[in-house]
Image (tube, rainbow, N blue to C red):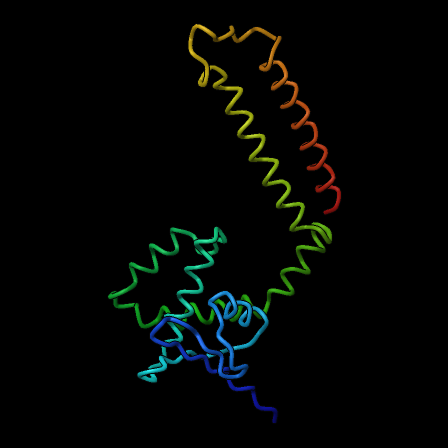
Length: 191
């Protein structure tokens, strides 16, 4: 029976530096995140007390990722999670979350394959592109519906004027809508 490789030991010193005992080098939180993404587990001990501080370091890694704009945790989820602290169900939450994440991890490849099968090999790219297109459309539409917001009233042109930038914006919106319709039709044909 094969045994799992023991987790790498990381020591955290008082100066907040993290020392990788396997490679005898100092590492950053970003390096630890990369280790996890590569499938390498680690434990972190306080160098002075020997206390296991892995949980707080993992939380710091998540905090750093969230601050970089890579938001994975929805605000509603974070609020609900905080509400469970001190609740009678608090003891159940860690095992529930762990079970859910293990299930997602186990089935992530199948989910990717199903998305690719349903929407094509570039499914995530198409979805991302559609989101960008929708945001552009929404921004342009808001500009069309409030064309005088940035102009003083004396400079505002009547809404029925078809010359100038408002006419160009309308033409642009029409083109974008036609492009989106074409993309949607192409996506529906792939199903």
